[in-house]
Length: 165
Length: 256
Image (cartoon, rainbow over all chains, first blue to last red; front, side):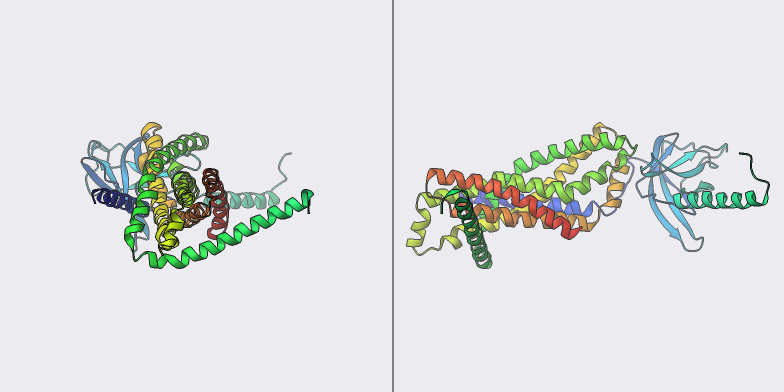
């Protein structure tokens, strides 16, 4: 009797652990809150294109992570992406004319938001908006720009005298 | 009929006989399985034997597989400057391949051998015949609960293995080698889909069916000698490993 109880308890523990693991695997792919530990404040930025930016990506200044991307939404009136940044409260002296740009870490790495400081006396407060932004660079746009500029210069080249060899 | 051709023919006939016997055995086990669920006591005992007792080895191996994956993955990805993809790569390779396959191999080594040698010893000591004499069907009473126990344990063990291995990857990648934690998880979340989790669990279930079936078949049909029990145990591990890897290819091709 006693032994069968031990077996039951161990089996129960095993099954519980198994289902906990399944639950972990299933829920780890859904979004989890990326709250910074301790105090923080929120700043919003509007982008034409966020590229591959994901919630949870770092917000960095001069390479130092000072916060996280909390959420990314789309504004139907502005037709722009609204990115909410959550910045650690200890970095509270960021000039409010600083600009935010979406950058890529490495060649294949994830995207993050880089902030370069402006020159204003005022600093960002909770709920402020970043005025100066730079969108994510979309590779296709770059390539097509390059190709069209090539085609354009060739047409000009045909009209103009032949270039020097 | 002597010489090489005769021996080849004889060994082919033996192989076919074994394959046929196994198919018949599998059909019978599957046919009797639903009824065995009416006596959950026996099945629970076998979930304990095959699952709960395998937990320690599964978790230990999972942790180290994850840690190795973290080291190797970081070293490789560093060359492309994309260490942040470590989470994605590790999670996908664990869910789709490493998790189910390594768990199945460990399961065959830990639980499969235990099942085969137990049944083989029961055969060698005439316990199975004694049951038949007492009008107790050893298939219902002994074989089917063991099969079901393995079947239930394997997907759960697979999930535990993958979860622990991910912890190992995280431990090495994020804590020791300094991959950004947010990037690690957010990229993983961006790339891993529910289908990938399902693929891992389906594989775990299929491998569980195959490995448990092979173990109980080999044990039940062991030669009733000390040598026969030993051979049945060895065959369990060897056949389970081969079948797992072949099935893995088929399942991957089907689900890709």
